[in-house]
Image (cartoon, rainbow, N blue to C red; front, side):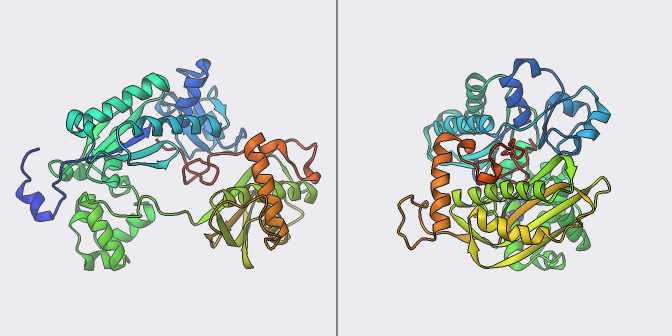
Length: 430
Protein backbone atom coordinates (compact mmCIF):
# COMPACT_ATOMS: atom_id res chain seq x y z
CA UNK A 1 0.00 0.00 0.00
CA UNK A 2 1.17 3.52 -0.72
CA UNK A 3 2.24 5.80 2.10
CA UNK A 4 -0.61 7.77 3.64
CA UNK A 5 -1.07 11.29 2.34
CA UNK A 6 -0.58 14.28 4.65
CA UNK A 7 -4.34 14.92 4.41
CA UNK A 8 -5.15 11.38 5.55
CA UNK A 9 -2.72 11.69 8.44
CA UNK A 10 -4.05 15.13 9.36
CA UNK A 11 -7.62 13.80 9.51
CA UNK A 12 -6.55 10.82 11.60
CA UNK A 13 -7.72 8.17 9.12
CA UNK A 14 -6.96 4.53 9.83
CA UNK A 15 -3.87 3.85 7.69
CA UNK A 16 -3.70 0.09 8.40
CA UNK A 17 -3.87 -2.46 5.59
CA UNK A 18 -7.50 -3.63 5.23
CA UNK A 19 -8.27 -7.07 6.62
CA UNK A 20 -12.07 -6.91 7.06
CA UNK A 21 -14.56 -8.14 4.47
CA UNK A 22 -18.34 -7.75 4.29
CA UNK A 23 -20.19 -10.14 1.99
CA UNK A 24 -23.69 -9.01 0.97
CA UNK A 25 -25.92 -11.28 -1.13
CA UNK A 26 -27.52 -9.25 -3.94
CA UNK A 27 -31.35 -9.18 -4.19
CA UNK A 28 -31.06 -12.06 -1.76
CA UNK A 29 -34.57 -13.43 -1.34
CA UNK A 30 -35.54 -12.94 -4.97
CA UNK A 31 -32.29 -14.34 -6.38
CA UNK A 32 -32.50 -17.38 -4.07
CA UNK A 33 -36.04 -18.02 -5.32
CA UNK A 34 -34.82 -17.74 -8.93
CA UNK A 35 -32.03 -20.20 -8.22
CA UNK A 36 -34.51 -22.59 -6.61
CA UNK A 37 -37.15 -22.38 -9.38
CA UNK A 38 -35.82 -22.20 -12.95
CA UNK A 39 -39.12 -20.82 -14.28
CA UNK A 40 -38.53 -17.60 -12.31
CA UNK A 41 -35.16 -16.83 -13.85
CA UNK A 42 -34.97 -13.75 -16.01
CA UNK A 43 -38.45 -12.62 -14.91
CA UNK A 44 -39.44 -9.59 -12.83
CA UNK A 45 -40.07 -11.09 -9.39
CA UNK A 46 -41.02 -9.56 -6.04
CA UNK A 47 -41.07 -11.21 -2.64
CA UNK A 48 -43.86 -9.71 -0.53
CA UNK A 49 -44.66 -10.21 3.12
CA UNK A 50 -48.01 -11.68 2.05
CA UNK A 51 -49.69 -12.39 -1.28
CA UNK A 52 -52.04 -9.41 -1.07
CA UNK A 53 -52.01 -6.14 -2.98
CA UNK A 54 -51.53 -4.16 0.23
CA UNK A 55 -48.49 -6.15 1.33
CA UNK A 56 -45.00 -4.68 1.36
CA UNK A 57 -42.28 -5.90 -1.00
CA UNK A 58 -39.24 -7.11 0.94
CA UNK A 59 -37.10 -8.11 -2.05
CA UNK A 60 -37.19 -7.70 -5.81
CA UNK A 61 -35.16 -9.32 -8.56
CA UNK A 62 -32.75 -7.40 -10.74
CA UNK A 63 -35.28 -7.56 -13.57
CA UNK A 64 -37.91 -5.95 -11.31
CA UNK A 65 -35.49 -3.31 -10.04
CA UNK A 66 -34.60 -2.36 -13.59
CA UNK A 67 -38.31 -1.54 -14.02
CA UNK A 68 -38.31 0.65 -10.92
CA UNK A 69 -39.85 -1.89 -8.53
CA UNK A 70 -38.07 -1.56 -5.20
CA UNK A 71 -38.04 -2.84 -1.65
CA UNK A 72 -40.63 -1.05 0.49
CA UNK A 73 -43.20 -0.64 -2.29
CA UNK A 74 -46.67 -2.11 -1.97
CA UNK A 75 -47.64 -4.94 -4.28
CA UNK A 76 -50.31 -2.83 -5.98
CA UNK A 77 -47.68 -0.18 -6.77
CA UNK A 78 -45.47 -2.82 -8.37
CA UNK A 79 -48.38 -4.12 -10.43
CA UNK A 80 -49.10 -0.61 -11.63
CA UNK A 81 -45.57 -0.47 -13.00
CA UNK A 82 -45.55 -3.99 -14.42
CA UNK A 83 -48.85 -5.92 -14.20
CA UNK A 84 -47.22 -9.27 -15.05
CA UNK A 85 -44.77 -9.18 -12.15
CA UNK A 86 -44.52 -12.48 -10.27
CA UNK A 87 -45.31 -12.18 -6.55
CA UNK A 88 -44.07 -14.80 -4.09
CA UNK A 89 -44.34 -15.01 -0.31
CA UNK A 90 -41.09 -15.46 1.64
CA UNK A 91 -39.60 -18.92 2.23
CA UNK A 92 -37.47 -18.30 5.37
CA UNK A 93 -36.12 -21.89 5.69
CA UNK A 94 -34.82 -21.71 2.11
CA UNK A 95 -33.14 -18.36 2.77
CA UNK A 96 -31.57 -19.63 5.99
CA UNK A 97 -30.11 -22.61 4.16
CA UNK A 98 -28.31 -20.24 1.80
CA UNK A 99 -27.33 -17.96 4.68
CA UNK A 100 -25.81 -20.92 6.53
CA UNK A 101 -23.93 -21.94 3.37
CA UNK A 102 -22.51 -18.41 3.12
CA UNK A 103 -21.23 -18.64 6.70
CA UNK A 104 -19.75 -22.08 6.00
CA UNK A 105 -17.88 -20.72 2.96
CA UNK A 106 -16.55 -17.75 4.90
CA UNK A 107 -15.38 -19.92 7.80
CA UNK A 108 -13.00 -21.65 5.38
CA UNK A 109 -11.07 -18.40 5.20
CA UNK A 110 -11.30 -17.09 8.77
CA UNK A 111 -12.43 -18.34 12.18
CA UNK A 112 -13.77 -14.86 12.95
CA UNK A 113 -17.05 -14.59 11.04
CA UNK A 114 -20.03 -12.47 12.13
CA UNK A 115 -23.49 -13.00 10.70
CA UNK A 116 -24.83 -9.46 10.41
CA UNK A 117 -28.17 -10.43 8.86
CA UNK A 118 -29.65 -13.29 6.88
CA UNK A 119 -27.99 -12.04 3.68
CA UNK A 120 -24.89 -10.32 5.01
CA UNK A 121 -21.83 -11.33 7.04
CA UNK A 122 -18.37 -10.03 7.85
CA UNK A 123 -15.04 -11.67 8.52
CA UNK A 124 -11.70 -10.62 9.93
CA UNK A 125 -8.75 -11.96 7.93
CA UNK A 126 -6.04 -10.71 10.31
CA UNK A 127 -3.47 -13.44 10.85
CA UNK A 128 -5.01 -15.86 8.31
CA UNK A 129 -3.02 -17.63 5.56
CA UNK A 130 -5.45 -16.32 2.95
CA UNK A 131 -4.69 -12.69 3.76
CA UNK A 132 -0.99 -13.20 3.09
CA UNK A 133 -1.43 -15.51 0.10
CA UNK A 134 -4.39 -13.96 -1.71
CA UNK A 135 -4.87 -10.55 -0.15
CA UNK A 136 -8.33 -9.38 0.96
CA UNK A 137 -9.58 -8.93 -2.61
CA UNK A 138 -8.36 -12.42 -3.51
CA UNK A 139 -10.28 -13.90 -0.59
CA UNK A 140 -13.32 -11.92 -1.68
CA UNK A 141 -13.09 -13.36 -5.19
CA UNK A 142 -12.70 -16.88 -3.75
CA UNK A 143 -15.86 -16.43 -1.67
CA UNK A 144 -17.78 -15.17 -4.70
CA UNK A 145 -16.62 -18.15 -6.75
CA UNK A 146 -17.67 -20.59 -4.02
CA UNK A 147 -21.12 -18.99 -3.82
CA UNK A 148 -21.49 -19.38 -7.58
CA UNK A 149 -20.44 -23.05 -7.48
CA UNK A 150 -22.16 -24.17 -4.27
CA UNK A 151 -25.29 -21.99 -4.14
CA UNK A 152 -25.87 -21.23 -7.81
CA UNK A 153 -25.19 -18.74 -10.56
CA UNK A 154 -28.36 -16.74 -9.83
CA UNK A 155 -27.07 -15.76 -6.39
CA UNK A 156 -24.33 -13.16 -6.49
CA UNK A 157 -22.66 -11.14 -3.76
CA UNK A 158 -21.13 -7.73 -3.33
CA UNK A 159 -17.89 -7.73 -1.37
CA UNK A 160 -16.57 -4.78 0.58
CA UNK A 161 -12.98 -4.57 1.82
CA UNK A 162 -11.80 -2.12 4.49
CA UNK A 163 -10.35 -1.68 7.96
CA UNK A 164 -13.63 -2.05 9.89
CA UNK A 165 -16.98 -3.76 9.51
CA UNK A 166 -18.86 -0.49 9.04
CA UNK A 167 -16.47 0.82 6.41
CA UNK A 168 -16.38 -2.55 4.60
CA UNK A 169 -20.19 -2.39 4.48
CA UNK A 170 -19.94 1.04 2.84
CA UNK A 171 -17.58 -0.51 0.29
CA UNK A 172 -19.97 -3.37 -0.43
CA UNK A 173 -22.74 -0.82 -1.02
CA UNK A 174 -20.76 0.91 -3.78
CA UNK A 175 -21.56 -1.81 -6.31
CA UNK A 176 -24.64 -3.87 -5.49
CA UNK A 177 -24.39 -6.02 -8.61
CA UNK A 178 -21.75 -8.62 -7.93
CA UNK A 179 -19.19 -5.95 -7.08
CA UNK A 180 -15.91 -6.04 -5.17
CA UNK A 181 -14.84 -2.65 -3.82
CA UNK A 182 -12.27 -1.43 -1.31
CA UNK A 183 -12.15 1.65 0.89
CA UNK A 184 -8.95 2.61 2.69
CA UNK A 185 -7.11 5.81 3.59
CA UNK A 186 -6.05 6.31 -0.03
CA UNK A 187 -9.59 6.67 -1.43
CA UNK A 188 -11.86 7.29 1.57
CA UNK A 189 -12.17 11.01 0.91
CA UNK A 190 -13.00 10.56 -2.78
CA UNK A 191 -15.59 7.91 -1.94
CA UNK A 192 -17.22 10.14 0.68
CA UNK A 193 -17.27 13.01 -1.83
CA UNK A 194 -19.45 10.88 -4.13
CA UNK A 195 -22.01 9.97 -1.45
CA UNK A 196 -24.93 11.60 0.32
CA UNK A 197 -25.35 11.47 4.08
CA UNK A 198 -28.19 8.97 3.81
CA UNK A 199 -25.92 6.64 1.81
CA UNK A 200 -24.03 6.00 5.05
CA UNK A 201 -25.26 3.00 7.05
CA UNK A 202 -26.97 4.22 10.20
CA UNK A 203 -27.87 7.66 8.83
CA UNK A 204 -31.58 7.83 8.05
CA UNK A 205 -33.51 10.86 6.87
CA UNK A 206 -34.31 12.00 10.42
CA UNK A 207 -30.64 11.89 11.47
CA UNK A 208 -29.62 13.70 8.28
CA UNK A 209 -32.08 16.48 9.11
CA UNK A 210 -30.62 16.85 12.61
CA UNK A 211 -27.08 16.99 11.19
CA UNK A 212 -28.21 19.60 8.66
CA UNK A 213 -29.31 21.85 11.52
CA UNK A 214 -25.65 21.89 12.56
CA UNK A 215 -24.55 22.70 9.01
CA UNK A 216 -23.49 19.13 8.21
CA UNK A 217 -24.98 18.11 4.88
CA UNK A 218 -22.31 15.87 3.29
CA UNK A 219 -20.27 12.85 4.45
CA UNK A 220 -17.07 14.91 4.20
CA UNK A 221 -18.51 17.57 6.49
CA UNK A 222 -19.62 14.79 8.86
CA UNK A 223 -16.06 13.41 8.86
CA UNK A 224 -14.54 16.82 9.59
CA UNK A 225 -17.10 17.90 12.20
CA UNK A 226 -15.83 18.57 15.71
CA UNK A 227 -17.60 17.10 18.78
CA UNK A 228 -19.09 20.53 19.72
CA UNK A 229 -20.53 20.85 16.22
CA UNK A 230 -22.01 17.37 16.43
CA UNK A 231 -23.45 18.40 19.77
CA UNK A 232 -25.44 21.07 17.94
CA UNK A 233 -27.13 18.21 16.08
CA UNK A 234 -28.19 16.68 19.40
CA UNK A 235 -25.46 14.03 19.39
CA UNK A 236 -24.13 13.26 22.87
CA UNK A 237 -20.39 12.99 23.48
CA UNK A 238 -20.05 9.19 23.36
CA UNK A 239 -22.11 8.87 20.20
CA UNK A 240 -20.15 11.68 18.54
CA UNK A 241 -16.87 9.99 19.48
CA UNK A 242 -18.12 6.69 18.04
CA UNK A 243 -19.04 8.29 14.72
CA UNK A 244 -15.72 10.12 14.59
CA UNK A 245 -13.89 6.79 14.85
CA UNK A 246 -16.26 4.95 12.51
CA UNK A 247 -15.95 7.54 9.74
CA UNK A 248 -12.16 7.26 9.93
CA UNK A 249 -12.15 3.51 9.38
CA UNK A 250 -11.72 2.30 12.95
CA UNK A 251 -13.74 -0.53 14.45
CA UNK A 252 -16.37 0.64 16.91
CA UNK A 253 -17.70 -2.10 19.16
CA UNK A 254 -21.40 -2.90 19.47
CA UNK A 255 -22.55 -0.56 16.66
CA UNK A 256 -23.06 -3.33 14.13
CA UNK A 257 -24.26 -5.96 16.58
CA UNK A 258 -26.54 -4.06 18.94
CA UNK A 259 -29.20 -6.30 20.45
CA UNK A 260 -32.74 -5.83 19.31
CA UNK A 261 -35.09 -3.88 21.52
CA UNK A 262 -38.40 -5.53 20.65
CA UNK A 263 -40.06 -8.52 19.01
CA UNK A 264 -43.21 -8.24 16.95
CA UNK A 265 -45.36 -9.98 14.39
CA UNK A 266 -48.05 -8.48 12.19
CA UNK A 267 -50.40 -9.86 9.59
CA UNK A 268 -52.13 -8.24 6.62
CA UNK A 269 -55.49 -9.97 6.23
CA UNK A 270 -56.47 -11.07 2.74
CA UNK A 271 -60.03 -10.13 3.71
CA UNK A 272 -60.57 -7.36 6.24
CA UNK A 273 -62.83 -8.36 9.13
CA UNK A 274 -64.68 -6.90 12.09
CA UNK A 275 -65.33 -10.33 13.63
CA UNK A 276 -64.13 -10.44 17.23
CA UNK A 277 -63.72 -14.21 17.03
CA UNK A 278 -61.52 -14.08 13.93
CA UNK A 279 -59.40 -11.29 15.36
CA UNK A 280 -58.95 -13.17 18.65
CA UNK A 281 -57.75 -16.27 16.79
CA UNK A 282 -55.31 -14.20 14.76
CA UNK A 283 -54.15 -12.42 17.91
CA UNK A 284 -53.53 -15.81 19.53
CA UNK A 285 -51.37 -16.97 16.62
CA UNK A 286 -49.38 -13.76 16.56
CA UNK A 287 -48.83 -13.87 20.33
CA UNK A 288 -47.58 -17.46 20.12
CA UNK A 289 -45.12 -16.52 17.38
CA UNK A 290 -43.75 -13.55 19.33
CA UNK A 291 -43.38 -15.69 22.45
CA UNK A 292 -41.58 -18.44 20.56
CA UNK A 293 -39.06 -16.03 19.07
CA UNK A 294 -38.57 -14.41 22.46
CA UNK A 295 -37.86 -17.72 24.20
CA UNK A 296 -35.56 -18.80 21.38
CA UNK A 297 -33.42 -15.76 22.21
CA UNK A 298 -33.78 -16.51 25.95
CA UNK A 299 -35.34 -13.13 26.67
CA UNK A 300 -38.33 -11.71 28.52
CA UNK A 301 -40.42 -8.60 27.86
CA UNK A 302 -42.51 -6.30 30.01
CA UNK A 303 -44.35 -4.04 27.52
CA UNK A 304 -47.03 -5.57 25.27
CA UNK A 305 -48.28 -3.58 22.28
CA UNK A 306 -51.07 -4.04 19.74
CA UNK A 307 -51.37 -2.22 16.43
CA UNK A 308 -54.47 -2.09 14.24
CA UNK A 309 -54.89 -0.68 10.73
CA UNK A 310 -58.45 -0.33 9.49
CA UNK A 311 -59.62 -0.90 5.93
CA UNK A 312 -60.53 0.47 3.48
CA UNK A 313 -60.06 3.96 4.92
CA UNK A 314 -56.75 3.20 6.66
CA UNK A 315 -56.31 4.89 10.00
CA UNK A 316 -55.99 2.82 13.12
CA UNK A 317 -54.33 2.86 16.51
CA UNK A 318 -51.42 1.48 18.54
CA UNK A 319 -51.66 0.84 22.26
CA UNK A 320 -49.31 -0.68 24.80
CA UNK A 321 -49.34 -1.71 28.44
CA UNK A 322 -46.59 -2.48 30.94
CA UNK A 323 -46.89 -5.82 32.68
CA UNK A 324 -46.37 -6.28 36.43
CA UNK A 325 -43.40 -8.56 35.70
CA UNK A 326 -41.50 -9.70 32.55
CA UNK A 327 -43.24 -12.37 30.46
CA UNK A 328 -42.34 -14.73 27.62
CA UNK A 329 -45.23 -17.13 27.01
CA UNK A 330 -47.71 -16.80 24.17
CA UNK A 331 -50.64 -17.05 26.57
CA UNK A 332 -49.38 -14.17 28.72
CA UNK A 333 -48.79 -12.03 25.65
CA UNK A 334 -52.21 -12.95 24.26
CA UNK A 335 -54.10 -12.07 27.46
CA UNK A 336 -52.45 -8.65 27.65
CA UNK A 337 -52.92 -8.04 23.93
CA UNK A 338 -56.59 -9.04 24.10
CA UNK A 339 -57.21 -6.29 26.65
CA UNK A 340 -55.55 -3.76 24.34
CA UNK A 341 -57.54 -4.97 21.32
CA UNK A 342 -60.71 -3.92 23.13
CA UNK A 343 -59.86 -0.34 22.15
CA UNK A 344 -60.74 -1.04 18.51
CA UNK A 345 -63.88 0.38 16.95
CA UNK A 346 -66.11 -2.71 16.49
CA UNK A 347 -67.93 -1.03 13.59
CA UNK A 348 -64.78 -0.83 11.44
CA UNK A 349 -63.05 -3.67 9.60
CA UNK A 350 -59.46 -4.51 10.47
CA UNK A 351 -56.99 -5.01 7.63
CA UNK A 352 -53.76 -5.40 9.59
CA UNK A 353 -53.19 -6.65 13.13
CA UNK A 354 -49.86 -6.67 14.95
CA UNK A 355 -48.55 -7.75 18.36
CA UNK A 356 -45.24 -6.69 19.90
CA UNK A 357 -43.23 -7.08 23.07
CA UNK A 358 -40.57 -4.62 24.26
CA UNK A 359 -38.91 -3.67 27.52
CA UNK A 360 -36.66 -6.70 27.05
CA UNK A 361 -34.43 -8.38 29.60
CA UNK A 362 -32.39 -11.58 29.63
CA UNK A 363 -34.10 -14.77 30.73
CA UNK A 364 -32.56 -17.45 32.92
CA UNK A 365 -29.32 -18.85 31.56
CA UNK A 366 -29.90 -21.72 29.19
CA UNK A 367 -32.96 -22.96 27.34
CA UNK A 368 -36.09 -23.84 29.29
CA UNK A 369 -35.95 -27.50 30.27
CA UNK A 370 -38.81 -29.96 29.78
CA UNK A 371 -37.98 -31.37 33.19
CA UNK A 372 -37.42 -28.07 34.98
CA UNK A 373 -38.16 -27.91 38.72
CA UNK A 374 -41.77 -27.56 39.71
CA UNK A 375 -40.94 -24.07 40.98
CA UNK A 376 -40.86 -22.86 37.38
CA UNK A 377 -44.32 -21.57 36.43
CA UNK A 378 -46.46 -24.21 34.74
CA UNK A 379 -47.08 -21.99 31.70
CA UNK A 380 -43.36 -21.64 31.04
CA UNK A 381 -42.78 -25.38 31.36
CA UNK A 382 -45.71 -26.12 29.04
CA UNK A 383 -44.54 -23.73 26.34
CA UNK A 384 -40.95 -25.00 26.68
CA UNK A 385 -42.29 -28.48 25.93
CA UNK A 386 -44.22 -27.11 22.95
CA UNK A 387 -41.05 -25.39 21.68
CA UNK A 388 -39.12 -28.66 21.87
CA UNK A 389 -41.80 -30.56 19.95
CA UNK A 390 -42.08 -27.89 17.26
CA UNK A 391 -38.30 -27.72 16.93
CA UNK A 392 -38.28 -31.41 16.12
CA UNK A 393 -41.50 -31.93 14.18
CA UNK A 394 -42.35 -28.52 12.73
CA UNK A 395 -44.50 -25.53 13.63
CA UNK A 396 -47.79 -27.27 12.84
CA UNK A 397 -47.09 -30.28 15.06
CA UNK A 398 -49.00 -28.61 17.91
CA UNK A 399 -51.99 -26.26 17.89
CA UNK A 400 -54.09 -24.69 20.58
CA UNK A 401 -57.47 -26.41 20.71
CA UNK A 402 -59.29 -23.26 19.60
CA UNK A 403 -57.18 -23.21 16.41
CA UNK A 404 -57.54 -26.88 15.45
CA UNK A 405 -58.85 -27.29 11.92
CA UNK A 406 -58.18 -23.67 11.09
CA UNK A 407 -56.04 -22.79 8.08
CA UNK A 408 -52.64 -21.44 8.96
CA UNK A 409 -53.10 -17.78 8.06
CA UNK A 410 -49.93 -16.44 9.69
CA UNK A 411 -46.70 -17.56 8.09
CA UNK A 412 -43.24 -17.19 9.48
CA UNK A 413 -41.64 -14.37 7.55
CA UNK A 414 -38.51 -12.32 7.28
CA UNK A 415 -39.61 -9.00 8.69
CA UNK A 416 -38.15 -5.50 8.53
CA UNK A 417 -35.08 -5.06 10.58
CA UNK A 418 -32.86 -8.20 11.24
CA UNK A 419 -31.34 -11.61 10.39
CA UNK A 420 -34.18 -13.84 9.54
CA UNK A 421 -33.48 -16.54 12.08
CA UNK A 422 -36.56 -17.35 14.15
CA UNK A 423 -35.55 -14.94 16.89
CA UNK A 424 -34.72 -12.09 14.54
CA UNK A 425 -36.00 -10.22 11.50
CA UNK A 426 -34.74 -7.91 8.73
CA UNK A 427 -35.64 -6.30 5.49
CA UNK A 428 -33.81 -7.67 2.47
CA UNK A 429 -32.42 -4.55 0.81
CA UNK A 430 -29.41 -5.86 -1.06
